[in-house]
Length: 162
Image (cartoon, rainbow, N blue to C red):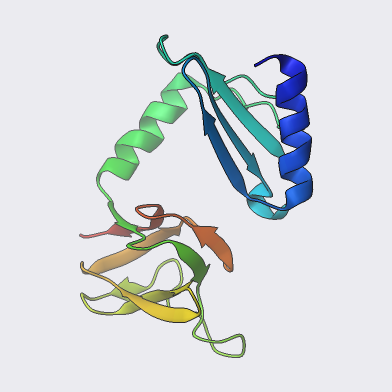
């Protein structure tokens, strides 16, 4: 597959409205994601020969360049996050922080939660599923924006169990 075929595939996917397309052949693997973070113009492409080890991701047209972060700051934040428990999505769907638009948030940063407390709702196939906490602690960070799509096992909240 040459670059012109890949570019036409990107244009086709962008016009189709699909959010993600994966294509695998004997020698190439391509993943195209569109509509990331509420924009409809961003397209991501990962194209790797199947026989080689994965290489560093290179930004494509329309993709913001990754920001360089100091290694010491990254290590500090990683060490800090290790002490927290990550609550992950058990299903694919749309993440909502409120039971309805006119109601208050289920939880906010700084709230103390107990096991069994409802943290959010995930809508999947027109069904609203309460996501309950399996741990007790304090909400440190909300990792997903309200009304955003979430994947299975995607981190939703960081909880300090102490």
